[in-house]
Structure formats: C-alpha cells, structure tokens
Length: 276
Ligand SMILES: C[S@@+](CC[C@H](N)C(=O)[O-])C[C@H]1O[C@@H](n2cnc3c(N)ncnc32)[C@H](O)[C@@H]1O
Image (cartoon, rainbow, N blue to C red; front, side, top):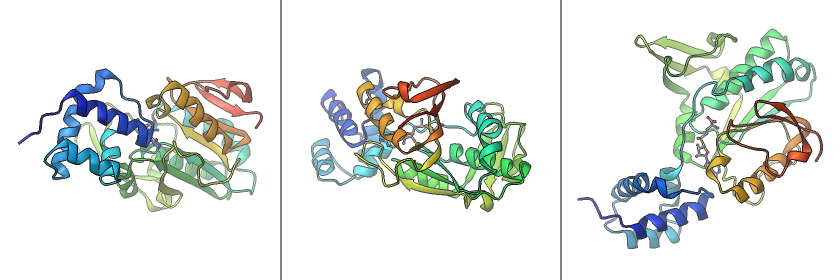
C-alpha cells in the first residue's frame, strides 16, 4: 500500500536534502520527489513519514535518503573536448616531468567520467612514452553510484553515446558488441588501478587532501544542483586544492563564480589557475 505524500512531506524532503547535501530542488521537481519518497519509505520498511523524518533527523537512513535525491546523469567522454584538451595541451609537457600527476574528479557518479580521464591519461602515456606516475581521485556523495563505479562494468548505447575515435580504447576497455547499438564495456584492471573511489560531500567545510594538491580538477555538471551562493562557496573551496598553473574543467552550464579573477579562461569552460 502506498503512503500519501502531501506537500508537507515534499517540503520536508527538500529541506533535508538541502541540509544534508546542499542540493536545491525547485518546485517543478515535486512529482519526482513524491515518487522517490514513496519508493524510499517502502524500501526502508517504514509505515509513515513522521517516523521516517524523525529517524532521518537522528541520522538513520541518511545515506539512503541522499542517494535517492542525487541526479547521477553521466556518460563516457561527455563534453569530450575537455579530454582532448588534456591530451593535446596539458599532457605533452606535464608527462615529461617525473613529479606524480594528480587528477581529482569531484563528482564521479557511476564512474564513466573518471574512467574516461584514466583512458586519456593511459593513452597519452603510451604515445608520449612517459613514466610519470599518474593517479585519479574520484569522489561523490552518493555511495550507491560509487559501488557501481568500482565494478567497472557498463552497457553503452553507442547511438546515444558514440565512443571517441581519437584514442585507442581497446588498450583500456574490453569492448564486446551486444546488439546493433549496445556494447558491453569492462574496464581493464590497469586502468582501474589508476583510480581511488571515495565518498566526499562537497558541502564539508574542508576536504581531506592538501591545498594545491591537484594538477587537474574535473568539476562538471555538479554545482548546478546547488544554490548560486553555495556554488560560489564550493567552487572557491575546490579551487584551493588546484595547483597554480593547473586546469579546472567545469560543465557546459557552469560558471567560475567567485574565482573569475584568479583564472585564465581558454574557452569551452576550461580554466587555468593563475593565482591562489
Ligand atoms: C549529474 S552527475 C555529474 C557526473 C559527472 N561529473 C558528469 O559530468 O558526467 C552529478 C553528481 O554530483 C553528485 N553530488 C551531488 N551533491 C553532491 C555533494 N554535496 N557532494 C558531492 N557530490 C555531490 C551526485 O551524486 C551526482 O553523482
């Protein structure tokens, strides 16, 4: 039997997801919130919303609640000009240095983005004959997508998501055709070994790594889920972990709020950090 979800519950859910993850849900999402709330309390085996929200306030079901309200849309080589920029502009010089190269993917979702980064790095190391140690930290607040990411197994509709032809994918991915459109992709262990998946809430006041630690940060299609004032706060924090001279990639509809005067813009939402 489904429990009635009134405007009160919808508003409580909106307040809680904002409090826990900084995610702002507008009124046009009400129907989706209602459906997701119904599914959630059923899966938690709870009979009514008063019990559910009071338990949530005490920390129970917190992760399930967060996982329910994230939007995890992602693809392999999404906005692929960022990977091409890495390959053509950054890596030819950077991979000549012996100092380890570190990349942070701050909204990794189900893993397609960090594996695309890893495949680009691995291809670049081959073509530039580099031994530079490379690593990728891939974080997300949602624990269920991180579990999917760790498996490294996907089915991709290549009509919707065509795979790029500018790198040798076979080196990194085991690709098996399943139908005219679909392929199954298994990430090879050499690629998996480049990535550490970790849960991280970008709303925390600081993050557990060193300032100026990363050469490259991918922060794409994530901060749009925050209020403008929160986008600016989070972006400033993320930016403090990027080296001067490092590159920040933002999603197509995101802006470098609050850091405009510290970056050089290259176009296509590619930003080089010019000062701390
Ligand atoms: C739409 S996906 C973007 C995935 C990928 N970056 C891309 O561009 O394809 C947004 C991701 O941000 C994550 N997210 C939302 N709020 C977050 C927060 N407070 N901290 C960390 N990650 C968050 C979601 O779980 C989701 O996986």
